[in-house]
Image (cartoon, rainbow, N blue to C red; front, side):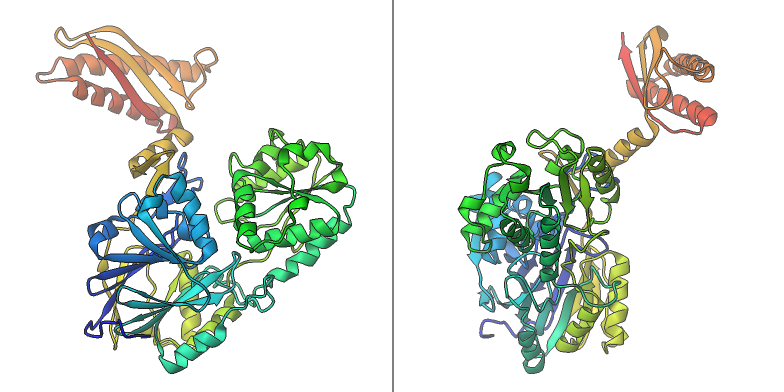
Length: 565
């Protein structure tokens, strides 16, 4: 099994490119000699702090600087925060990608849409399969999560075995019967020893044990049974195949047809059925365009939009703008998902809109229609007991989650000096005797807006200013040669003061004072030797901003529009 490993290497490096100190963007790399193995390549979805941004990616600078060393990517599971950035990395390099059929099929869909299929060499792996990837030997160990066919990874290196838990929970009654292989992890720990454990920290603050996914099904069944005459809409993550199976089971038991709504929902249902992970009879599926030709008591819509995404199917329903469904008092909407941190406001707005349409709404705060896919503290304790790692690094979570997980590991017997809490960009050196910090690499956010990636923090800062303080545009024409103002200044505002026809006296007075101050500034500036367009614009901006802040305590964006005659 370990014949390919180059035992002459006396250390490996672990490089964290995302997923530490945040939820999403999961991406790390293990470097041994002249080879780099990437673990996951995910994205993060925008929050209210990133206006206008569509996606947030890891900074690939380190990988691009060392692209000749990259030997492949191993994927733990098929969630977007673990596979969603692959298409962007593939723009820069060809990749061998290893993962389950579901994970790679989900990734392939986006990669093909981007026209990058030729640069991705997909390698399907099955449960407990061992693959030689360069000088690494990687074993794919079954774990349970909220997407089928998730893996933990046992990565054999020259200095010992590194185990990465992937996202996981310990579900002993999974919907598909695929149990987490805790026994195999125990065998590795007892026979080889685990030099380093990297483990999911998302629920490290949550006490107890996560509920089994199979506990959601009976609750859904009861809701269908007690709402026989209503039209039922259920929303969940489009990748949550187990949840969709339980929704389908409840719908079929109640004699309802199933209508997928949302592009990703339809694609993923078709994909999961094609590879045998979702059992819905063809005769029980119908196109959403036909939904209004069925009576309410025969309808079950499975929809996207559980996170209140701006243009998602559920959000459009809440706004009465969905072209297929107009909700009313005979509708029941079940939100079968937890709210991702940062989406609380959007989801709350959607729920309010659903109520305004007259629909009844059931969510996880009312009934057990969702259970987490991440291990809680008792499960994390069990993982520590099974693995008995020499060194431990918590991964996947905000800093408070990582910190809580590190204390838990210490309670379970890992010496405090053998635990390192890292953040994005940190690099660790692991040898046979120690785990030490070994510098930093770039790990800033890479923003994607539409088809443009690489938006700067300055752009986001401007957008936040526009949203919170508004904009003031100063329009003026000058003759620099004669040091005279030809026309203006005219002042146009958006989001800062009332419109021109509806200004209170104080604002009208301020506008006139601004014009006078700008005229004085221009006259003084263009009369100075060496003055040019940029100098005059800068002085206009400074003068305007200072007077506005002095009089209103506000800081709108000031944009001079200067025309030279």
